[in-house]
Picture 1 (cartoon, protein in one colour):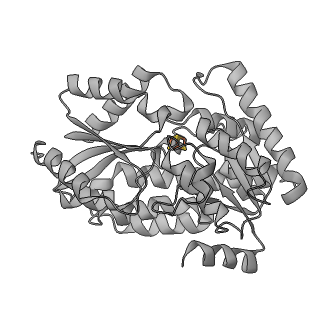
Picture 2: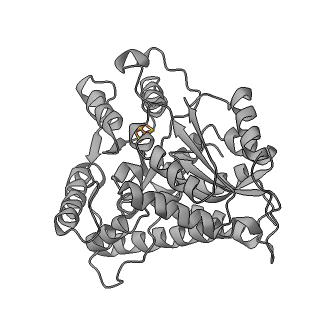
Length: 364
Ligand code: SF4
């Protein structure tokens, strides 16, 4: 079932309204507690940008361009609102442009999160909790206010989904499925109701082999989002597989620690936000992030690192030199590639990727 049909079904059968969500970090649990379906938008790749492109400078990334074009083409007319997390300057600009220039008639809700702060920072925690409260206030006139029990239930469901995602990622080598099919299951949570996503991930987990079955070269994949998803086919066709994930759309949003079960829901959500592994868009320390990645890559015996960045994504690009340096010193080669979020992964890009994977060591 495609997204549009799924949204319609959720509305008809479950009475669920829908909010379109911009990348990357936001409290999905709040939407679930409100019985609202959050549908994320990561482009989509290949979407025709004219005439919306006149509103944005050409050096703004493809994700922001395609989101605006998608909305202005009326493709998001079925949603009841738009949630704009303060991810980067480009998305912050979109969050202003849409209402100010009346490019949409949907209510736009902004959500800011702290950057570059340690989980122990009292001010950062206080700020995040206040933003959560502010978001609940902004959503209330449109969707109501969730009870504490509804928030707790939603938190429990999303923690279960996160744990399943982690389990799948940790055991990637035990699945015979190719990377695209594997990532399609992981990414289905971008639009599915959380219980449907949990069921889908459990089904995939049941197909796990008792022993590792992957014989291709293990590599780490890093970037904002694996789009277009042919990139994953190109990796497999070149003789490698994504053994370790560092995509912002996937593993960087997983809470790595469960909150205290007795916590107030907003404190639990705050704990979960600060328990995410470092993300470029959260301003994690350069060296700390690179070392986290290296540790993960080593734990999966990765033979190489592929950094697949969206062109003009400044937050991501800022981390690339240090990360490549630290990997080089550790003897793990890396390849930096950029995408403009085209409809397809180009033949030229496939050739570069093949050459890189060919020179990586075969696992013993
Ligand atoms: S790709 Fe980078 S610059 Fe573009 S929306 Fe995402 S985080 Fe912002």
